[in-house]
Image (cartoon, rainbow, N blue to C red; front, side, top):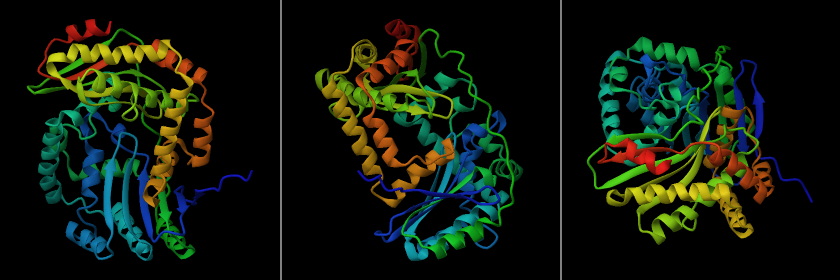
Amino acid sequence: MSAAPTIFERRTLPNGVRLLTAPMPTVQSTSCFLMYAAGSRYETPETNGIAHFAEHMFFKGTERRPTAKHIASEVDSIGGEFNAFTGKEYTGYYVRCAAEHAPIAFDVLLDMMRHSRFDPEEIDREKGVIVEEMNMYFDTPRDYLSGLYEALLYGDQPLGWDIIGRKETVRGATRETFLDYVGRWYQPTRLVVGVGGKLDDSLLARVEELLSELTPGEMPGPDPVRLEAANGKPQVLVHTKQSDQAHLTIGVHSYPLAHPGRYALQLLATVLGGGMSSRLFTEVRERRGLAYYVFGTNNSYTDAGSLFSQAGVDINRIDEAITTIASELRRIAEEPVPADELEKARNFTKGRFVLQLESPHGTIMYGLRREVLEGEATEPAEVLAALDGVTAEDLQRVAQDVIGRNALNLAVIGPFDDADRFERLLA
């Protein structure tokens, strides 16, 4: 049997920048990425929100392209799509375009990263935009719930803060705030440049030429997360909001990204809440009619993680929803998962992973996340083989370790103000 083809090629330049490529010669497009190991976790209480705010400001003009319109017009002129995103541990910027225009895409991206003006007038104007984005976020329970749940898990430390920040810190940001954050964390050793799709040697040579202008520099990472409450009694956080539907997340602390049990944990989350035939969907929605949406997943950082279920439920039946979800979490730790259910979860997980890799954009995004957070873009074939290797015994061992040993945590948004009521349901 021949070995699976290698998808990723990686090289490190003299200044510490890593270049990750995923050649796909049969497509006609190229996805051009810059991803930094820097996000909201790298902030201080005084600068909370600056990582996300900076992401906005990079699009507002450079020395060569003085305004946001100049940048947008150049990307539009090549028929490209461009955007950015900020997470807690990374920030990414990209342009997708026809392969022939990829050199222009990288020229624009690197110009933004190296020569953004951070004009004080633009900063003040964008503060209003960010505050309105905050208002939308806080007014959308399904979105705000994830931040509320992580505030419950991690408390007053960067992993527990909202990525979007606080209004007072955003309003207080100055040009120096941005220059200090970017100068500190946007270092070459924290940058991985990704190129997926159709590419040739001339493109890579041009990219390396542009990257070589970056000055070497390095900063240590953020402080490790503190998990004082990880194995204590049930924790409940209620955000009182008048609404016709309650939104809730119930979960436990789990494993960090590179934990050996990561693939068993992934399949465990799939059994619980992946797809419309999962246990949670079947029990909470189909059998009991308690929710329109309900799912289960695991979210991991480099040194922390959580396995949880999220749902939007009938406010008059929230007690039943909580006890039903909690029961399903406990049941999977107490009873082995049948072979046929494990196999279905395995095929579901592998299938969704393969679908993610169908496009240059999805492939290089996957590789970049691995490279930035773990220092290695694991080949997809290795991931599929690891999923194939998970046994029912692995699943139960991880379920007992993660759910059996940790207290349940609950975050709720709705017309409630009695956390003790919900603590009693979880006990």
